[in-house]
Length: 255
Image (cartoon, rainbow, N blue to C red; front, side, top):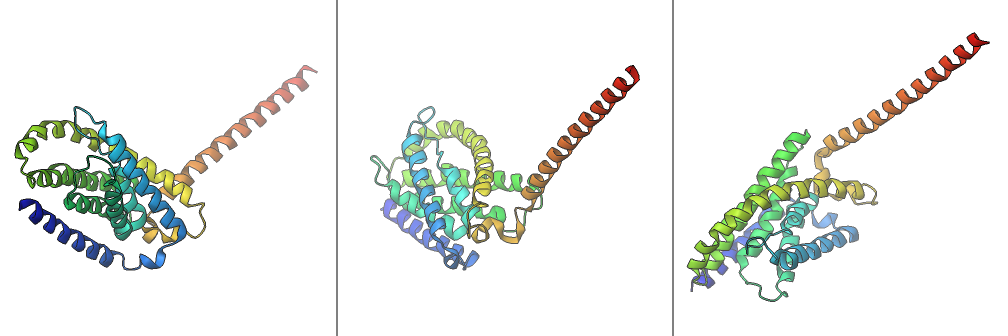
């Protein structure tokens, strides 16, 4: 009975999350392109691979949910609606794997995971510091919700309360590992994705993360890096010219 009640509640949460995602990004459907659909499909495939295949290897008998950072990334790139779709589809696609425990609370948390990623750019990010803090805090909330709320509820719903307590220590060990690795993966992968998408026609302005010129802090860093390289090159040229002039003067004096 508890299994059906918790699944029913989870389905209601899923519907509510889709409604919230639509309110947050009502123009999402208008921004859909073939490139965006392709990228979302690639993210779904990676999530299934990293979570349902590689993630089963685990540490201390507990699973490492490596695919979750891509869920978060999908929200950062495509917004709450795009992220929610990636989350729902990736969970559904993962059900084809053997020994998968089916409970709609997992789908709800997958969607929430991605939607929390979209909150990184809910307003303009003015510096790398605030951007990094936003990623770390929101990711911690998402990971904590999945590990210590969604999973225990799903397991308790089938009457396996001893299993919840038995795996608590494993989760306490694995959770800090996830919390330490995922922000690094997300930040590095996001910046690589941004560099690639800049070169893709008709995709840059359709991204959630480019609203309000939210990536201006990255562009500033890129411009600063180019300026530093230019200054270094100019300094080297000046030194070379100076050395050449000094050599010429010495030669003339010798003669």
